[in-house]
Length: 215
Image 1 (spheres, rainbow, N blue to C red):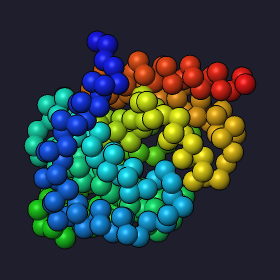
Image 2: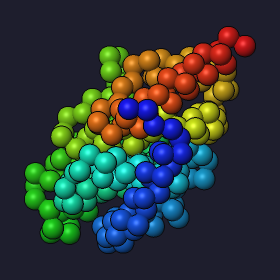
Image 3: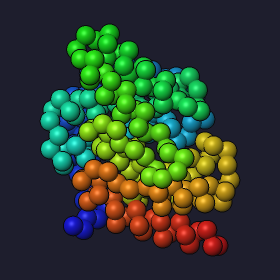
């Protein structure tokens, strides 16, 4: 099924009203507030806006694929905490964010041990693999988080986001291109909605990237 960028924007916009209820969850709002005020401003890509974007994208995908209300809540917690480790360090930040989420869920007394472990694993799954598939989904909810985290690969803002990551990593954009090309070649959308929303535009972005590489 073909879907254009306007339809993607409309799909994400439609989820904004329901997103607010998750943002207001104390467990989530506390972390968002902390990230908004304490993240290093040199994080031009892994910034507060990126976390909000991942939450929006994940919820839109989840709604398209009819995830349950409670599944969406767990997904929103994972999305809110998936980059929280950047508050302390950049390399290997995922285990830190995963542990922050597990501790917050434990302190709330609202989630089972199994749910805490699931959110922990979802965040760990956002790590990029050194070889093989770019990411591996190890829980039944991970596909929606992983697709949301890399959604820009299949959106109109792909080049802008690539530039922001280049600035954050302090790597010249021309040196970023082979890495980005390899990532995109190894990457695949993992949720049904992700495949529908982002596949065509990702191929267009990959074609555009290849033209940049030969200039």
